[in-house]
Length: 272
Picture: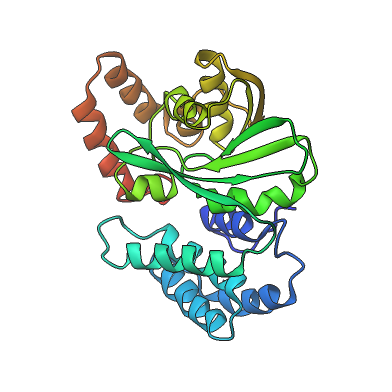
């Protein structure tokens, strides 16, 4: 259930993302949130508060909550911030210290001049394979927590970070639209003949895109469904800015579009 924590809509979205389904009824988390929420005024206070409580939870070995708080702390940090990589690694370190839901295998799948990180979860007796990935700013560790709901099904499950996501982004792989490329790489690596795919958030679009071009995909779960990344931008964009953007897109003015977005990112928490 989506809860109203603060008046900042973007902050609300992320808090719900980090806590829903897993920690809404957790007494530790709810006690912490009573102290955390009043301190969240801007991105600086957001970072300072979450990083403080991450360290507080790590000390008594509450690694599950510490990982959530480190993820929150890292979320709005600029890519140029030298602390960002350290906070990201603390998120992953505490996550894997706390994650004992099931056994899994880890992989680094060669991709271009880097790799796609992946985990494989085997459901005993399963005959099918499900590929599972997130969206624009997701980490595969978020998807791993959801696998508890998929235990016992007739699918072995492979979760991976694609270009622009999680560790794949940290190793230099930028976000792309042609998601059939990483999906085909994963299918080839595991020598699979048929797979089903599940994409969460922007991954819903990416899943449908991949299935349109990769014929070894037999079933698609789009969670959520949308057909154009531009739709998400148009919802919040003034008409005059939208008209300018579509004109630049029509004439393929990439440099001007990048400059335009850099200017908007300076004042928009949704874009930055």
